[in-house]
Length: 255
Ligand code: ADP
Image (tube, protein in one colour):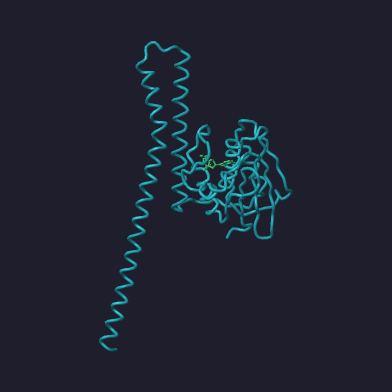
């Protein structure tokens, strides 16, 4: 081969290497920015309950003239905030295990209706949400991890209870079985999620609208998305249903 064409080849190779290095460097920068943002969000979420635990425990420690009712109220706040911290840490841990792919699935052949029953049994109703089961396909059997799938369903039911603002809140759960896949829709009659926010709700820490009363950290749907990916299925927002609406899609057989 001629000296000049060898030189050209080498220079093209160097160009490719330089481009690959640049891309790797850009990716590292992006990951580092994401990591910083994530740590910032975690610190923010931890700080709120910690501040209140510190303040109320100091009042209890230093306040001589505090009456019994205040004592009870303040220790109640400390207790609730401690539970919130525990939930937050549990969710963060679960999300990190799911994201790193370290999760062990326990697959079984189960009736889909039984998984829905299990989620509803674990749900502690608050605020009078009424559940309506639609569709006759609950007996359909699927290969899945029933505990993990029930975790997703429970999250959707709990969210409907928290965010459905209708005077008579109702959540409809509808199962539809196709030859390859089964869908389970969760549709409530609340105000739902505005179109411009529908793209972000599955991201970590994303909360939309006025959620101040609901007390979550925006991790629930991110966990649902990761669980569904591990189960070989999907979860998506269903626009145009007039309320909060989510569709879980599952393969009938493990992939
Ligand atoms: P959170 O811990 O805030 O409940 P999620 O990840 O479960 O976090 O939900 C993300 C956001 O999506 C919520 O903060 C809420 O704004 C919105 N959302 C979830 N479900 C519904 C629903 N059924 N109706 C209206 N908004 C909802």
